Image (cartoon, rainbow, N blue to C red; front, side, top):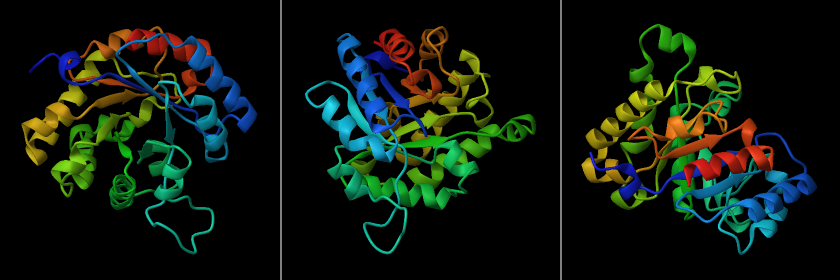
Length: 256
């Protein structure tokens, strides 16, 4: 397999989850813009919906992209509390997370919901980051690979070549989200290899080679470099460590 650094740009996304008011988000974005060194890594942040517009203003003219944490699959209508893909695009987003483990396990998003959300993001001209991963029970039962393959297939099997070209996948083992437990670099690389093989089987080797696959799950400055050393690990989806400029910049610089 070709060296991933020569074929796929490294991506680092900071998912702020349900943290940061608009003012706090703007302050953090300004620190990131000021502290980010030029490099090969593509960097994005995903504020809560309420902070998207002001953070977009704070990022304007910088190399940092704006991402959203979730989306509803319909374009408009009587869906109280929902936010559509066209709304996110209009707010300045170019990336949207879909199927995050917290959306799946707290809010009940199913594979079909994730597929519809990914399609809505693509239709609005943005890039979906499709999150996949197994629970501890599924891993202990020996089902981790089958679970992840199924989650990948639910989205990828119905995408066109043009849509696949804008796809990113993020592997986030549920047992490592916010727990302080992190998959070893070997575990991360092994599952990323499974995901890339699944992409190849579903969409061909060319699409598989082009698709960035990120790792997410208790990523910190002191483990980012080791995780990124995997041949199939193309970047990081960062949670808690993205809430402070110093810790997130350390990760970004390790990736760059």
